[in-house]
Length: 142
Image (tube, rainbow, N blue to C red; front, side, top):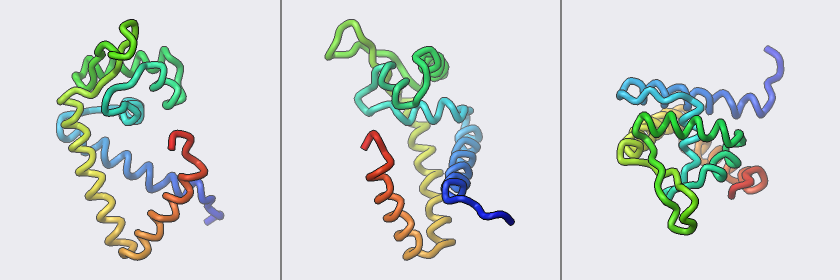
């Protein structure tokens, strides 16, 4: 087997996590796409402006609008007036969207427990600590 880069080694478990969460959501009646899920993860608890979401998701405003339209028609988000600017709207998670988040969080916790069991608590905690340290120099939204 050829040498595998660190980037690929980081990506493989993340892809596995995403696929299992999306499959679990679909099984629970929430057939959310990967693009919708990745976009919705960026919505702040108090709501986010479309331009902020587009920037953090690294998509065009048109793509952001399309994803919000899809999520809104499924009942996962809503548009509400921005109290800081009467001309602007905030995208906020609805109670139905909160149910999806709770389901996804439970699935993720179960997967992480499987990984902890497989690696052992020390190796898992070391991995978590190392990745958290890397976030300090890689996450522009920290």
